[in-house]
Image 1 (tube, rainbow, N blue to C red):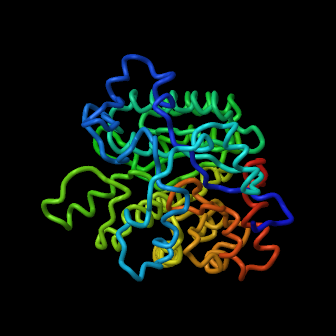
Image 2: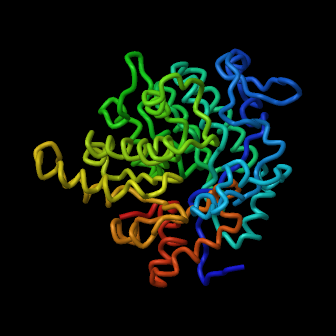
Length: 396
């Protein structure tokens, strides 16, 4: 196994939620909104009273093997195999996929000192019932309580990202207070417009300042991870007759080129933070983009620069400088990390393995092979010190 002379900090690991993760602490009045049901002998999720295929196997009894889609994402598919064919035979869900103690042992096996740990199925909630703000708040609170039980927040090695929904600010602040008291160092916010009575709205608007102020005061890292953002509607505009919900594991060439799952949502979300002044009003906020790749980064920085020259009075500070000061990027292994370092600086790039997801790395330390063209100091920043400093609340 590849090793390093410094502790490895992984910004993107996951757990697969057991049904108990959502139901253990969920009040009875909300249980009709999130149910596991049996259909033709298979476990399915019914959310908001509707059957969902967002995740085909929401019980995660079996899953695709960690890293089994790596060659597909690297573009190494000379036989033209389908995405599902790349996954191979499913494997039983291991304890390390959903149990805190077993995951710690897995970190030891991987040679990883510490990791941000993110949910998997939770990304379905806001996209499906985001308009039911109390139900979303209750489900996220139940999940965060389960995480506190099973993993603990900020135990020094596992740093679960506490899920926060901003649709109802009072609920969001209560949840933020709860997870901070539990020791959370990281919160997860969906990179999408906040649902509201008249459609979506930007979380960069001043109405959300109490949330950003509290995050800055507590030096809490905000992460934005790919999710069900609602951007699948863009694909439907172009494909008359397309219907149904967003399914992240169903691939279509046109949808892939549109980049509605990864690039488009995150660049819009980060642009909202810049253009709507969050970093001007709250200079202590830091945001990390996880599992969104980096192909969108150079074009976005170019648009920010161009807009600043055209409309300098629309910004209180240079938006590109603000972006580089407040935002961290975790590139994909198939991306050129060298290019991201050149665009952002080595101190703003994070390593994320996406373990144990099939699109991630089976062996997180293999990422060192993808950054062999970085200097030794740059490699250490990406693999270790950048995230360590963020989790310690030490940032410039």
